[in-house]
Image 1 (cartoon, rainbow, N blue to C red):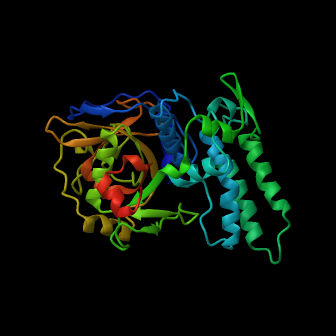
Image 2: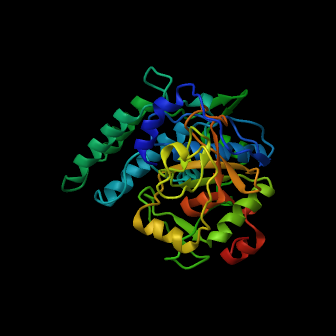
Image 3: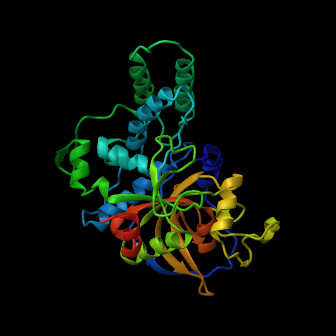
Length: 371
């Protein structure tokens, strides 16, 4: 997640807006159960917000009811793993607020999940998340440790934990929730989440198709594996998943001129479209090919600077399909925090997906060797 984007939007999403009349008229085809959009505020934790929202929808799909999970629990439990990996790579690895959807699943597998009411991550006298000081302190500690020779005193781990506990709060070993005592692991199991059921996917031409590969983006700090599928597969997987009642965690690029939270849209605009015309009329969008997509990745025009949650599909008045994607920048836009993403934008700017394996079409599952 590009922290600059999150920080820059803090003032926008916290203020009521007045929006121009959109030329688009959408008819929702499917809109699956999801909790209300939240605000990540001044943090680079979209990965946790998006994937936590995804898991909340999974819990509802599994018939376990509506529950608000703690985004900051995932953040708190991920940082020590990031720090340890950073030091093992002698500082030649990503460290910072960013991560990916599979990191939330990893924390759920290793440690569990926690409801929001048991761990808010607000431990410094405010009701808004701001990790700027915490991130600076953590990065400062690690940068000094990297420059030291010899075996490190294991007390460094307590120093990292101390900073995290000071800003986010100590994690309780157990908690009461809806009249029952839980640990994070027992709560995860009560919610029906089996982490091995979830699959990470991507689509790039520099790796063999239908094989796992390490996705080369900085926030893949654990060098996690993603199955490589075609660009057409990527679209059909999301369409099939939504048809069968599943939602999808999305990772991609939102730094384009056609991405506007304020207008509730993500579209591919023609080059040099005047600012005043970007969202005042419907523009023709390109037929995005795998080659176009690869060129954007290789040139750095496509980066994994934001994660969100695909919760539905819609069509505009011309019959063009859009995905409905839930953001984590608050609710102050025309769609209560959701956006309509065109298929062209999805094809060009998606970096990765995560979903339940049963949401993948049978033919694609067979090619991937998934049961």
